[in-house]
Length: 346
Image (cartoon, rainbow, N blue to C red):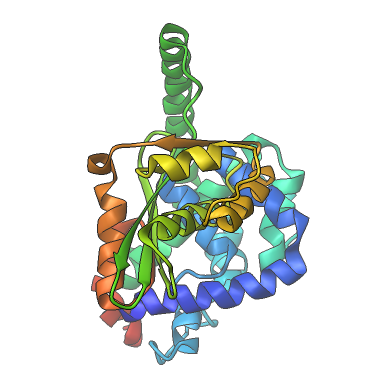
């Protein structure tokens, strides 16, 4: 639970500071990130790195979870700048990969560095960049928790191997999707967010449950939000739909499908006419945010197909606690290792 609170609090603080200074470059960065078609585990890690909300020892010490923030490779303070740019192993990896685009702008502030690389780099260079960041973080965890040491040469070779495998899988998937869509006449898959609610009639509270799915229907994240003074379950459903769109904007999606089991709310979201019903103000807010996406669809699904979002909302309402979780299996692994983070490295 303390790690979940760390992610929520640290993410909010970083988001506020970065949006004030980042602006359009970060919106471009997020859009390009989701369009690179990387494995979801890599996309999510890069997204978290871009907000500085990964559990580095420096971040954990700031949250008073760890007492020592020294990086065991060279005993500098462990933060994003040190892990990905300053550490001798990282420097060697960037040099071996011969990505001059990345090494030439190392003087930039770390949180500005990622959007600038994405702005100047080709899609292929950005994929190499993302794979390298992910592998540096993975090797960091191996060193800290398993005492597995990797050289810069080892990591550079692993990046190249991963990239070759990814390009082969990606080419095969594109061919498969092209054939599939030619046969059934459907659009290419896009990101999806399901929403549902839990409502308490005694005190007019509700909770929104959201589940994010990737382009190949892989689980990406889930979120719950608490609401008070909600007039009815009908209004609660509309608020949940609005929260789904807000989450899509924050995650930088360009194309998105919003899925809910309230047919009335979905139809109102699909409409472009001004809504004068009791939830009209919420629907107008939803409609005003459609321009944040290149493509947005609203789709009705059966209640039985929406149980994961409903259960997330129900649990949040019972506990009176909101949450944001990315890759459940990753969070569970991190929580299991939390005791190690809190101790000094051997």
